[in-house]
Amino acid sequence: MRYSQTLLPTLKETPAEAEVVSHRLMLRAGFIRKLTAGIYSYLPLGLKAIRKVENIVREEMNLAGAQEMLMPMVQPADLWVETGRYAKYGPELLRFHDRHNRESCLGPTHEEVITDIARKELHSYRDLPINLYQIQTKFRDEIRPRFGLMRGREFVMKDAYSFDVSDEAASESYRKMYEAYKRIFSRCGLEFRAVQADSGAIGGSFSHEFMVLADTGEDTIVVCKDCEFAANMEKAAVVMQEAGDTTPLAELEKVETPGKRKVKTVCEYLGIDSTELVKTLVFKADGDTVAALVRGDREIEEVKLKNLLGVADLEMAEDKEVFDATGVPTGYLGPVGISVKVVADQEVAAMKNFYVGGNEKNYHMKNVNLGRDFEVEAIADLRQITTSDPCPECGGQLATTEGIEVGHVFKLGTGYSESMNATFQDSDGQEKHFVMGCYGIGVTRVVAAAIEQNHDENGIIFPLPLAPYSVVIVNLGLSDAEINGAAEKLYADFQEAGVEVIIDDRDERPGFKFKDADLLGIPYRVTVGKGYKESGKVEIKKRKDGVVEEMTPEDALNTLQERIQLELNESRNI
Ligand SMILES: [Zn+2]
Image (cartoon, rainbow, N blue to C red; front, side, top):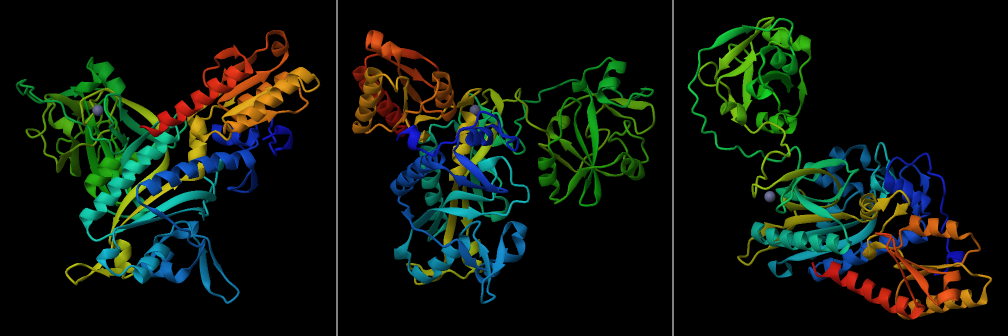
């Protein structure tokens, strides 16, 4: 492709509307343009990157035995009423009436449509297993669309749905998709982790999220440096070290702590470490008051507490609410003799002779022991994991990182097939409900996530498999027959060799062209300029590491062709 003939409106300035790196760079590189809130046009280079992702997804889905199809974007409301989601989905589902006043919606997902196809077209266990997928534009009416393609209202998604005879068979379909997803994101050249996740609104028995690791993600995840373990911060289990503390229990004492209410000031005043103290935190849990105990230096993980209590609503109680429920002023609350329900983090149960609030203004208690001095309703893992905790799986070193969700695999079970009465005849003659799975990849989001993970201050650094072009030739001698001739010949040779190449043949200053080449993130830049006249050599620069080499145009062609092939092969053979 010739730069001079491409719609590639790069921008020097950072657009004010862009809040995150990928959004900023995709606008600046002329990949996307906003039509209206959360809705973008994909310009030629942006679309090329999207197509790269689609092609990888398509190849791997086909290899995994799935079949491509295409379902309508407009869906009748009746189907959604059958599953109860028409009422439940909320305002993200864009609803409208057609000219015959039929209620309709724009598909944010396609479980209803595919289940309708299954109940009409699949009749026997002999038709199963089957996995059907599509790559299609989806619409979700996000209340606050932002971050460009990261959280738009309209986006391209791959969604797949599997149908099986049994739970066991469905697990096998799930495993195949899980493996296919690992290959897909590896082939995209991305650093990612599969994280065990809650299944959220779609429901189902279990699920994994595929997260691209970046500094700017929406979720904090904890990963192991020594094995494949990865989990959402809220869900990561803390493994207890062996207790083995044989210290004898000492006598309970009251100690004066005048005006000291915070962990830090109490510890300073008493000359103790925060690991010797236990915090008593009070929550409102579905209207009830609950006290939770954690070691002084730890943070409570509210998701874990919520799961333990089995409540929908959990929030820290206000000081006044704490006083009303316990009669103890803020900062002096402890578990000994209080009237509200108390639960403790597992670490507290292993502690001996610790400090707590004295349930009286200006006092704390010392040498407190769970079991001797107070009882709790439950002991559980309630605190946030830290990077000094061991990996729950291998005991290795943990690290935290941000993650961007780009894929999600769900084992759905029979929820949809039951509500829509989708059945097949099994080998024993019985009518049974299909056991389903669903598997999504945010195609446009993958491109944004790739940029969040791979960029520098000069622009995008595309992983080769997603780059709109592998090579950009910068022609610096449009009016010089010798330079121009060499650049044009090299361009023709790359094309003939099947390398995706764009030539910057615009009448612009060298600095301007170099800046654009960096901004676009094309993996290899070949510059044909004055040096060619002097030495017969062109300059190759790798976008990722900035390494520059000089060689003849023939060598440049052969070298790059070889390297590109090698890199693509490597990403295939994970
Ligand atoms: Zn590990």
